[in-house]
Image 1 (spheres, rainbow, N blue to C red):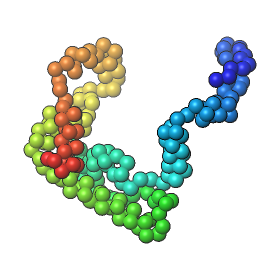
Image 2: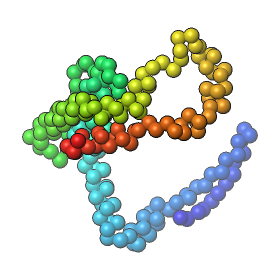
Image 3: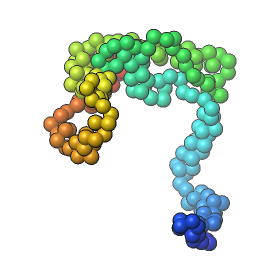
Image 4: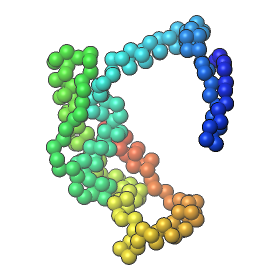
Length: 197
């Protein structure tokens, strides 16, 4: 880095330090490229090309994060961890196909979105029906998230005035000895996705 002019400004009781031309971008780039390994250069080139080719486009549903896609489908189809209603409206994909595809590839990517969703929907149904998953869902107490924070006779004002609810809350006493089992539930989802459960 090339450090040049540094000035201090004092205005309206605020001290500010500014530096003009802290970096010499051309010099830094030249130095980095001169010293870069061929592997790094390939990686940088691949990253730039991928960024250019993927600008303003999305991945096919599930291609970028299968666990997140599975969790979303499970929630939409089966409702929350404690059951309940899922999402009843039509499924829509906000999707821009890859610029590398011709017209037939655009239609293939549209079919891939729907096909992946339907496959994950099947997996989510089997996942939710599994007794071991039901045990894990009960153990992680995620269904409690749908319960109101305040009781029927409590007010927001009373909650805010209760120091034990926030300022004096003893997190170690709450969490010690209470295994919520999130890793177990996530592993069961992974095994379901991989066809191993």
